Image (tube, rainbow, N blue to C red; front, side, top):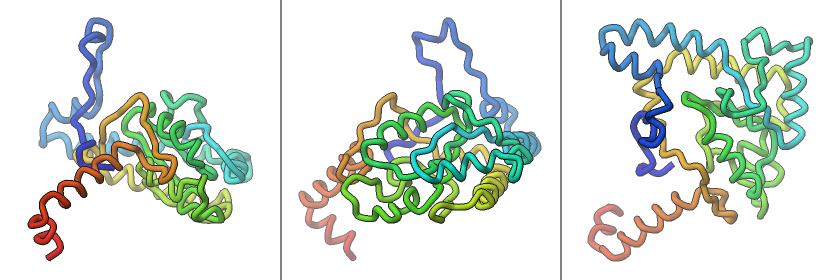
Length: 229
């Protein structure tokens, strides 16, 4: 994502302050300062890592493997992630199980935007990670990390349920070892609607930022020469 998208902690809009109270564990830890934060953060991370609720989201054959991991043979409930939610408001993670087309990209971005922080993404399957067999296709996003941040990459066509459990364990380890300061750096501006370029599958605002930067270099040859050195 572009650097200009980074933002601070979320705040309640002025028109909602009379009816909404925003209390987050992050703000509580910040208020306690550096003294108690190293003690509280590991406890909070351990609790969150063992209750990562996925969003019910599947677009291709990888979704069949994702369904299988909830069956008794593999039993994802052992890791606290059996509660597949039907709404992003109640989920912590998206497993992008299957091909992401450019027509589907805006819907996926909207779902990701609606997830509450902290939120995570597991890119499942070759088609999701790099485009897979649809590499260089005019209609498929060549890697879901072009449109939303990805935490864990799970290759395969399709990956077996054991691979999903391994990816979940790696994500849990990442959650246990992260700090709120590091997580805050990954936040970016949230939009209700994010417009996507159907040629590249990338958000238009990122392309606009790149175009502005390239235009500035073209108008200032000296700066362009200095950067090339």
